[in-house]
Image: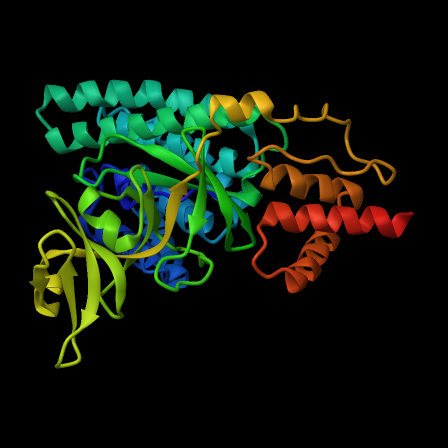
Length: 413
């Protein structure tokens, strides 16, 4: 599962100026409904745009509609149709003579890479990511020649994001059991509002529940609740991202230097709790609190500035802090010298092979070892995990999988 920031969703990157205004309006309505999680309405508007494009024999509009349909289906988890729609859009844009359609061809290549990545087709994903990089570089040159600074910024942002996706995909290929169906990749954005630099938070997931163990740029972190929040769940269409916590917010959030906040974007300030307000100049950390009149205000950590609900609605984007991502301490040289060396890695687990302790990072590996033990039956594996969760509700996915493996081995003996 890959969560995209709004300005990195393919349909948001398209160049719409060569379509009819009526079809553009339908496509923008589709994007708006998708952002709100109204997938049925989003599909209807995109399909209307596609039908009108066909009647007008407007191939560019048809290509844009296919990208919109692909985005909706991708966010609904219907990756097969999403891939097919991306392929149709890419073929259309590839045949357009306008130099500005090279930008849309780049977007289609990026969308194809995402679809293949999520489907686990790593070789095809890398091919399309690399194609998208080359095409966005050319598109950037075209936009620079006509002083289209916003389009140049879009290209820079996507190129930076593609570099991160490619690095993570290559890292996955060098590891074992890489599978996006059991992991979530969440983008890190900068608190100062800079859009062009990214990193990725890697977290294990069980259905839509987020596990506690995660990595950022190869370093181990752990998910911690914030002010009484329970374990984090992510519904389809949820937009979340990570923000490095500034010094002035660390004490209030009980965070340390280099820790991150997992932020879930909200449509409105509608409840109390720690959160952020986003502006063009950066991000303010603070608390959403209910005032005497029953309205939600925002009190900043930095200078205890109180912003009223009317100011929030008019000028800011709202995010609620769902959890803290705390850096795991690295062992000291002395600890490394005295620590027991890990046992040699065993071949693929079988009913007669006891499970070996995992090194950090192993939520995905443990889960897949369990699946292999039950001969690839994911439904049985999930039932075993749920049984263990009832016994240990606070355990991580890796711990639950290891418990299920141990129980299964004992039962078979």
